[in-house]
Length: 280
Image (cartoon, rainbow, N blue to C red; front, side, top):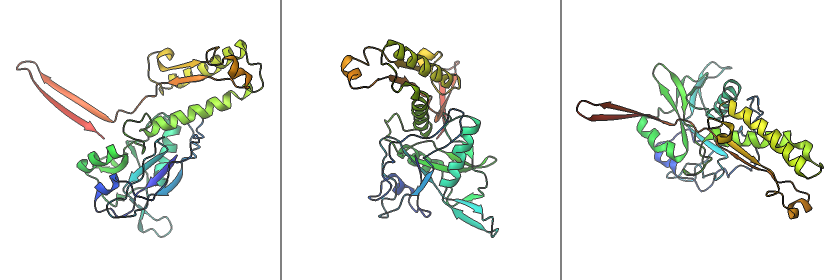
């Protein structure tokens, strides 16, 4: 994945919701190198700045596969050499937060509502109203909260709103599972392509995904609700076996972040009710 920065100076935050005509294309569809123990080995931490081509369009283009994430605004920190305050694009710090969350919670945890260590201030303080405009457009805001400090307050990729990969943790969890399954089933190559092999594939992948489910990365009260692994005569008919292939279908139900928290307060005496919401 690619962690992208906006320009340092942004007068109109609405311009961030419109893609510039030149920018960073969708990253190659190669997976994260994340390991199952939660340590990050992202190919994602290639940080890039989305550059403006006009004042009315300084955002990043969409990434259909969700392989890019955009963060705003720049942060203020102390230069360790000069001791002076300097501004820095957030991508390097965001990459560090991703790695920290991987180590402490796992790749399935959205790297959001997390403090940015070393950040003193922001080039621009994003308001709640601006957040409500930017978040649906896939711009992850970094915000200051009194008593809590400076935190990442967004977990979106640049995938379309309806995409299954609109959240950073879902995209990265899928990448981790793909890489882990590929590495863990290398023994399959050149084995006899028959029922014994299919059963072994189902057993190994099922055991791995069960551990992923137990870690809280997959939705469901049982492994059967959280995932399925299909490798049998239906996925491997004679014409597939004749080409030297063994095909396995894997379905997963990733846990998505609680991006919007809704509180409903009701008074039964006079049937009045009030709804409060908080979140992204």
